[in-house]
Image 1 (cartoon, rainbow, N blue to C red):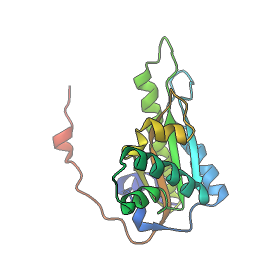
Image 2: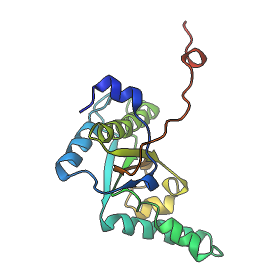
Image 3: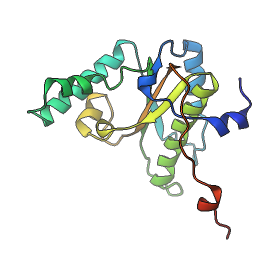
Image 4: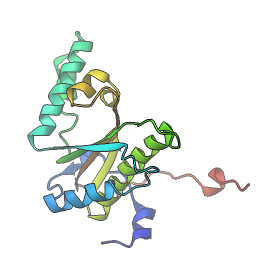
Length: 187
């Protein structure tokens, strides 16, 4: 396992199309989800949950996405519908982080949504620490109510994102990072 600070310095997203199997073992998945649940959570509200897509569950979710796409785009070519159907098929494991807020006198909804984001980032970092590639993505279907309903989300739930996890097929390329002098001010 890499040193924690070095891991955080070099972590990169791996494109799902650059992933293959194997994915995490059941034990590794439990570790990833445990770390995903260990985030700042003011008020102990647990304003997030996870949906795991592996095996044929990825294809079933793709069917939901493709059906909604086809219904909303009746003149779409078959190739476009097939593309939508394969949205979750590249990586062997996809974890959806579902976000919801609970009324609370001291914990605003925005803070609860940030907790869900922290959960997603912990999942990405845990998968990377275990040697897998990971990528946190959304896309039109992550915000479409018909898709969310088809994936079993409740009316008051949103999707913070889909985290694709698998074995990288090549080294991940880094992207330019901001210079600290451009993003840090002192008060």
